[in-house]
Image (cartoon, rainbow, N blue to C red):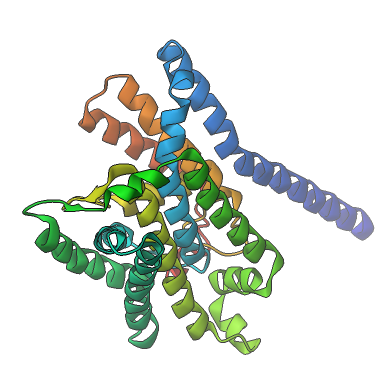
Length: 324
């Protein structure tokens, strides 16, 4: 009788594992399925308009996908960053100012400006022990004020030579380079392993000898630098930095990553594909809603509903309290 009960428990345990495995597989497939479904639905509703505008969609995705890569690393370790739009704005102004001197210097200047703001965030987050979302919200308003001051009277224009770099080859090449390097680092180095481990449980990682404080600081510097590079890609498209440059970029990135299946609390369940699929899904969804002729309020309502659904599906409720 005891053996029979033991066997029943083992069978029920195996069935539970199989059921959980199927659930996890379905959840991980949802973003890709959603991308395909959304594209097909909007393509039908717009009578082929979505397919015909694929070049426009591709042109819009570069900045979001590059900047989302940096935030992906931050969210993997359980942090948040709401200052990305302001980083984009400051770096864009720097790129415009330096473009008249030398284009290579403009690129480096944008990257360094983004890295400097990232270091500012990292210092208060790591050294002053302030929650990441509080620090970056303060930074968002602080540097947004600088952007308004520098570009409110008139846009900060870049040198006309920037338009020479407005080619699909250059923008796509930069995007693919960022994605390829980030993928290799995330998947095949100790950096990626430690990053996910910090998101899953920072105390255990500290006991393992990992310098978590230093790593968290460097992640914010890296994310800022990547967004600084995205600022260059943005400027070669638009040619100037207005007072609204980078406005709401942080919201776009957060929505894109969550749509891609990114767990809000980071950790071991994070996948690099979250960046690519999420960015594509967000841009396709936004363009589809615009093509449908919906008002801004209706678009925000639909995006908000979809965002909440994906958060409910992908949130790891056991570790949500670990958001740093």
